[in-house]
Image (cartoon, rainbow, N blue to C red):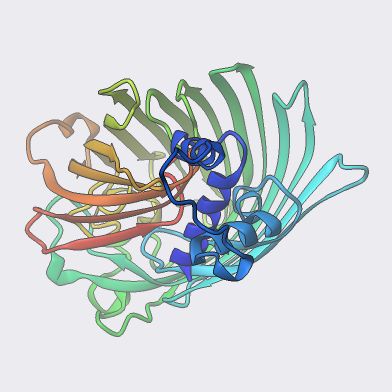
Length: 410
């Protein structure tokens, strides 16, 4: 079903005016008169249309591409939107404008193949100054029953893999303003109520069977948080949904205050940057590089809940390891990718190398002791939007890992 939706949505995008050169060329060929001496074929009737052409026509009429990309009101299929390692998630969504199109409401829910659940209610209350200023409120309830924890540190053991459940309610308000076409500033403030429970993954023991609150801070206490984060985004990508040149950088700083136990106050600083360099005029061959750093530090006399620690491992950091494989107060990761836009209109092949590490002290981050990996993958997309990434990674000494992400990284 996922593949069908991707094909239909991409096909719909390719059928729109302004599609890629291959589509334009096909249309031009269809309008050229037949050369002398050639045999002309009988025009196909609707019953003779192929599956792809019928799918394109249906997708265009149903506005599948617009529904997936969020540019039209009404019902839409929610794909993903959970967390890393949740499995494939699917559910319904509905978006509509109210109060004379001044307010946008977006409601959705989904469940994954691992029984992860999430429900979101988003409202955009203001969009002004030529869409440069936006004000949103977000409500989210999520249940993640099979999260992984291996212990803290860059040398944590795979043999101590455990499972735990996390149930969280979020309520937040966020604002952003495009100061310049390539610079957006913003902030988020809200309330979070995380709860940790018995893991349901039968392949591994539950977290409380191998770890104590001393090993995994926050395992016993149940703090509620008020948090505030400010951020800046520098966006120089040619096409944000499917970049082939330029770059993107996000810098964020936030504080988390424990309002119930007064034992888990901490602050967090994140930097993530990615760049794209085309190797040919058509941007069919592209080199991409990425580097990220996370710094999480507790207030004096306080601790950091283990589920909020920085990490490497998984689809967006180190693809030769499981999600959240290594966790600590500080993390650094980097990757390089080669991207080849194949002759198939909606598919790009990728080859990558990754490296990363976590440390208890940020001064220990460096090139020594890096975990690493390499692999290959596929990207499914239209000209303007990436819909899915499939990656296979290895080289870290823990076997092969496969990841499916139903959204671009940024």
